[in-house]
Length: 309
Image (cartoon, rainbow, N blue to C red; front, side, top):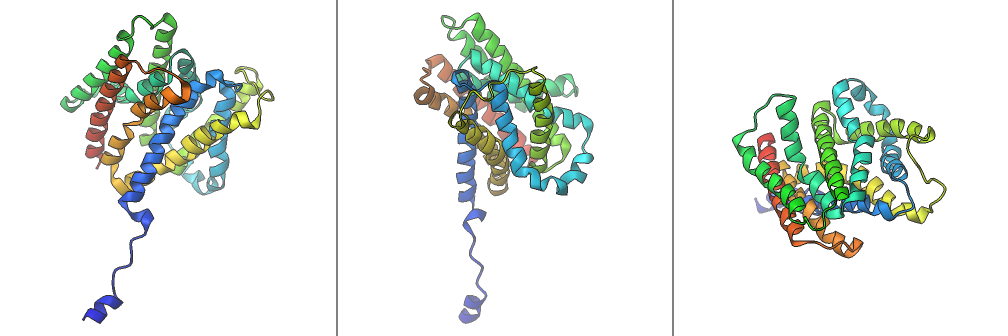
C-alpha cells in the first residue's frame, strides 16, 4: 500500500499557485499604486507635459496588449455604450483632472484623496443616480473618510492656501470620476485584459487628435528618453499592465476581501515614500488624516468584497 501511495502521490503545488505568490504580487501592486501618485506629483518638476505622460501611460499597455485585441473584438462590440463611456472617463478626463490637482497639492494629498475617497464617491453616485440608500455598514467607513478629508484641510489652516483648496477640489473630482470608472468596469462584464484594451486604445483615440490639434500642450521633442523612462516604467508598464493583471491574480490567490484590505494601504505608503523621494514633509494632521481614510477604505473594501465573495 505504501508503494502504491508513493506511486500515486499528489503532484507538487507550484509556487505561482500558492497564497505566498498572491502576497508577493499584491505587495508589488500596492507599491505601483503608490508610485503612480508620486509620479503624478513629480510631473510638475519634469520637462514632460501632462499630455506627454498620458500618452506614455496609455500607449505602453495598448502596444503590449494589441496582439490580444482581435480575439476579443466580439466581446468589446457587445459592451453597453454607457459602460464604455464610464470606463473611458477613467482615461484622459481622469488623468487631466488628477494631474492638475497634483500640481497644486502634494503627493500625500494625491495618494489619500483619490483612492481614499473613492468609496465615498461611489456611495454618492449610487445614491444620486441609482437611488440606493446608504446601508448601515457604510456609515462608519464613510464617516472615517469624511473625518480624514476635513482634518487634512482644516488641520493645516496656516499653510493651506486658496491654490491648495483648488487642488483638493480637483482631486475630489478625480475621485468621483474614478468611482464612475470603477462602476463602468463592473458593468462591462469584461476580463482584465479586455478592460485594459478598452481603456488604453480608447484613451489614445481621444488623446492623440487633441494633441495634434493643439488642444492640449505637449513638450514632445524637448525631453530625453531618460526623462520619459520613469513614467514609462511606473505608469505604462507598472500601472497600465502589472497592477491591472497583478491585482486580478492576487484576488484569485487570496480572495477579494483580503486583497482589497491590503490594497487599502497604498495611501499611507504614498505619504511615507513622498518624504524621502520628493522631500515633502508629512505633517501630523496629514498623517492622522491618512490613517483615518485608510481605515475607512479598509472597512469599505472588506464589506464590499465579502459581499461579492
